[in-house]
Length: 193
Image (cartoon, rainbow, N blue to C red; front, side, top):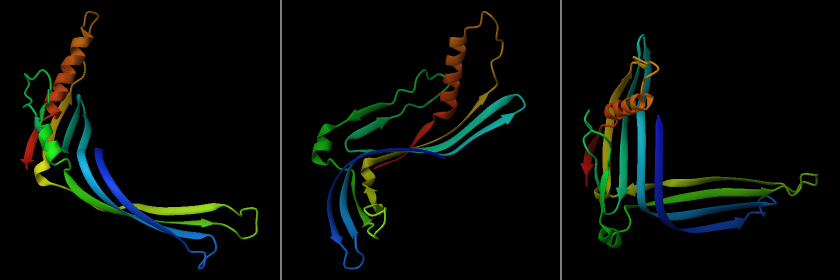
């Protein structure tokens, strides 16, 4: 599985830490609560990518999902056919929607941690040990702001056939990339808010 994510968000947080030396000398604990307002999100999940070798070819199969959330964004993904020369994803962006509702959801998270400064009368005195658990929480995206696409496809490579001294390798590689794109990049819109 391959996952690629990108997020942009603003957050406000409130933290508190306390010296707990009355329990154990040199111990401090702390916590932080965070409110999150996501501005944009993009995520690509390739859940099933298989490469199989057969006697005379290589076969690549993929299945995956693309989710995009940005207030005011409208994507237009062209249908991929064997005649498609390029996968030009067109988009329109309405800035007025961004100004009226800049966030695409809401979320929260919590952080917890401790710090201990060693003081046992040895050469390790002053050594600081700390640990934390961060970002325990969740982010909810508004359904109208999220556009989802799925993809599944297959590409079969039979090798370079008819290769000679006068072979146009650039054209061969371009044809191979076009076949790869036509076989694998079949994005289908799943829903629109």
